Amino acid sequence: MSPGPDVQAQLEDLQSRLAFQDDTLQSLQDALAEQQQLVLRLQRRLLALESRLEEGSLFDQLPGDPAAEVPPHY
Image: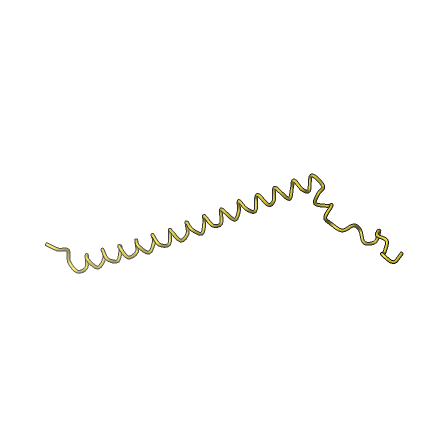
């Protein structure tokens, strides 16, 4: 004995919803993994900048105070 048409339609609806939820979950997992990689890269860059700031090498690359510099024609 096969299930009635109403039960069959409900089963197909549930299977369709499950497939959609699986696809959505996979998309969210992919996005989360991508975001995690971005966060890790940004953390590494921040740590590098912090260490350069502590060493003072970051300021070596910045121009000096323009008001204190002598113009080239003097």
